[in-house]
Image (cartoon, rainbow, N blue to C red; front, top):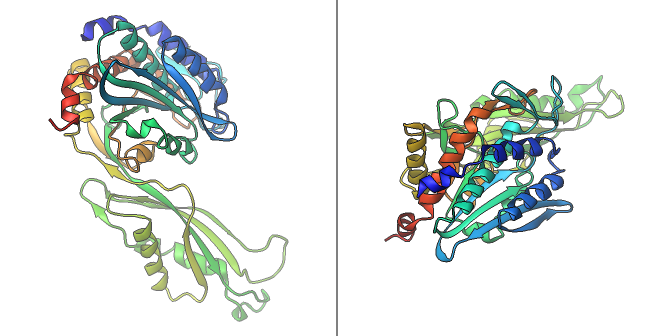
Amino acid sequence: MDEEALRRIDLEYCRKALEEMVSIPSVVGSEGDLAECLRGRLEALGMETHLQEVEAGRFNLIAVHRYPSPGPLLMYNGHLDTVPVCEGWTFDPFKPVVRGSHLYGLGSLDMKAGIASILAHLKAVIESEIPLRGVLAFTGVVDEEGYSKGARALLKTEMARADAVVIGEPWTGMGERAIPLGITGKILYELTVRGRAAHGFSPHLGVNAIEEAARILVNLDRLEMRSHPNFGRGNLCTLKIEGGYRVYSVVVPDRCRVEVNRLLVPGESTSTAIEDMRRLIASLGLRAEVEVGLKPPYYEPFEMDKGQPIVRVFSEAFREVYGRLPDFQYAKSITDGNVFMGEGRIPTIHFGPGGEGAHQPDEHIDLSTLNPTIKVYIKTSLRFLSDMPRLELMGC
């Protein structure tokens, strides 16, 4: 069964798709042209497609290939958006350039090469006409580099009933890029510190909101955080502090706002995190009033068992291609997997071609990783949409 699909791998198709995608700017918020390009390619494969409006002018792309026999829904996913162009590029970020085995371009690694590999795998599987069961789907979502609005919108569609998701993020299954069996969640604390204004020459008559906020920040290492056997403890990072005059004046600042990022491990939640911060603040004996709130984005942590059907099927596919089982890890990161698995409870695999420089100048993909990635995708799809995984999913 595998040989027919593997024989149809078209690396030239994959590479041309990758180069085309890199040439289409899709910085977060401007993903529309890329969605239309991919829609054309998927319709050329005979897949049903439609665009889901996430917000004005921003659309998820959903494509499905339905087999006659009922069975699981397997969704391959990629985010359409990239981060903005940063300083330091030595190549035009929107003109793919090849040097040796590396192709350079914005989003090449994160994650247009993953999408191109998914497309090549879909082409091979569909054109092989192997009789499978269920639904083979691709979704291209907006806003992964922002607030994951696209992934959350997908949970309002048929895709919420997916039995498994494979996200083409550049986790190669080896070493530091081991496949996540779980990922931390995150919150963004918004602390509003309210002091009392006074003349700056008589600061004792007021309550300095900035200085009170500073007392919180220097004591963040005392914040009670839970430990997890796989993840250890989460972490904290102060991202922003605002306070003081807008127009120069010698006045004791009466207000200060602070944003603190916190990674959550399974067992922690928004409510427990808020209580942790409130306890810390109460212990400091501050004179100011402090409001502890949260602002978007928020992501649920998750962890999976190796016994999940998609994990077992993927692991075997990986072993057949690479001659070894994939490395697994519990990652301190955030992806749309936090939405699919953390919120939607859809078992999620992260796997894609490798390279270097995500979110950095001269981002590039290692072209030699495309072919084995496509092979793993093909073997995963053929097994997951065959009779055996269907019986396992049904609990037989």
